[in-house]
Length: 238
Image (tube, rainbow, N blue to C red; front, side):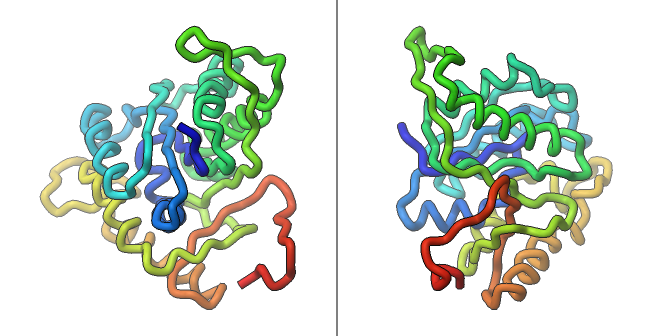
């Protein structure tokens, strides 16, 4: 299966919180989208890896993604080294995405910045044919995504690209709420965390509203880019 977009997150729920509106919109337009989680989020204060496995599958169904995989890297302790890079390279070469969306370049959680650089490096290295990988004992061809964008997470980084997601915020929120163990839930008696408050849940909406306000639409998501954002015509800008 070839993907148009591969969204990579250090933890299950990173993608839903940050770029699921963009994914939902592109899926509705016929694009084929996949999600790759690097860890199972086993160090999370609330829930468990097993619970998050189920929640991630439910979120994937809500969004309608074609595939979701988890590399089961060690939460909190994975490294940007050859072994981890090659594991991601195998996935990139397996699905051949045109666009990769990955973690914020700088954020509160140390895994987000690490995951950002790891995914970015793997995207570049995946295009080098002298790096040999196999899938089911068959050699893989080199493949480099055309574009790598980094979504915005806890910190309010200034975006280079802002995507209109008007009409898709409800699906984004539904995919986030699939993670019942992690976010605001009056029925939960687990410890409170920075992301389990009602304010944090509401922030998904007011951030989307504010980014939308800035580009004169209802809701939007922001991304930073590793290179200049180019358009064919000045009129391509909305």
